[in-house]
Length: 108
Image (cartoon, rainbow, N blue to C red; front, side, top):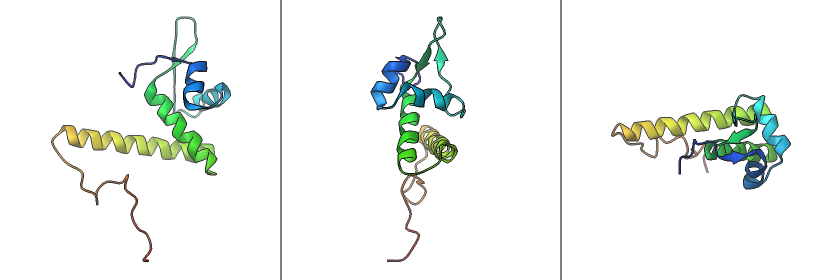
């Protein structure tokens, strides 16, 4: 399945990730997610967009502000894309280079 193909209607998208349609609409203004529009003007979301929205919802539930949650998700998404590109070019990411692996910031 193409993760970037906009196949989810607003209602189906909200149901799929367990949020309200209002929450998805609120993400339109952040610039994080810009859904495609059907010929009738209805929003259509891709699986990738739903994954980003779900991650924002998780961060909001953890107490982050919307702007901060969107920035975190944007940076995580860009990092993941960079890692994919490195691998496509034949490189590899070592554990100490992988920013998705938390680093210890204090001594035990």
